[in-house]
Image (cartoon, rainbow, N blue to C red; front, side, top):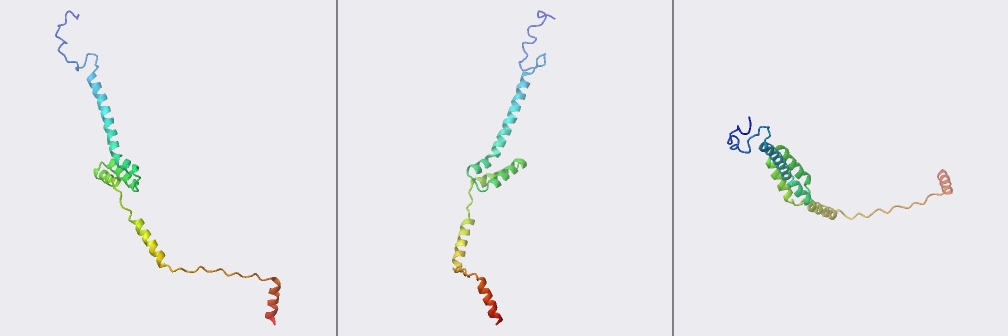
Length: 142
């Protein structure tokens, strides 16, 4: 069949996204690339979102950094948003330190309650000479 035998409207009305005769599908190829990039970007965004509590705790040098990390990891693996919210709350607030003031008060009371005991003075003994030992032995026999 020659080009003169082909009707001029035979392929003129076909849109460009229809698969060509050689099997190349540009729309499908573009959509595959788009969805692969989209899935990777969603994954990066998801992991970045889950690392927010750990970054907050690390920047503030939070004393409960390990707890925040464990909660964020549990939220990541269980897909339970409650763990992530708990990690954000723990990372966002500094809990007051009640133990140190109470320990200082207890130490102060303990030091007030102890009576000052005088330190014992070590007794100095003069080592005996061999002559005095012999004379002591003679005195005991008599």
